[in-house]
Image (spheres, rainbow, N blue to C red):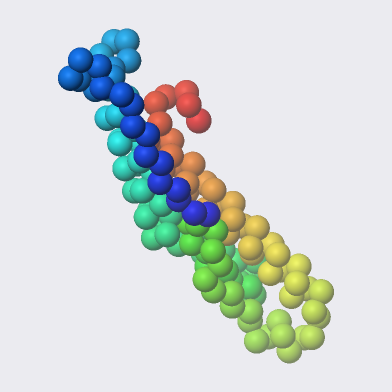
Length: 118
């Protein structure tokens, strides 16, 4: 997932930046949104979750940007030679890691958004 930077310039009105009704400065709001987006992108890359399947036979580490950084498969599982079982457990561990990342991000985003937005 990449983070795009957006810069929006609004015309000045009589020497002041354009403000929304109620005194909201849209330029300031856009800067704050961009800072939050950059902070979230950094936090996503720093977040790492672990997930297992088959009682620890397959372990997956995934970053908050959904990049898989490690997959471990128990040697005992490989000795058995059941390729289909290895595949199924790997998929299960990957899906669990994905779920954990989403849960973590939801918790972080929920703290940044006004109540009722998530």
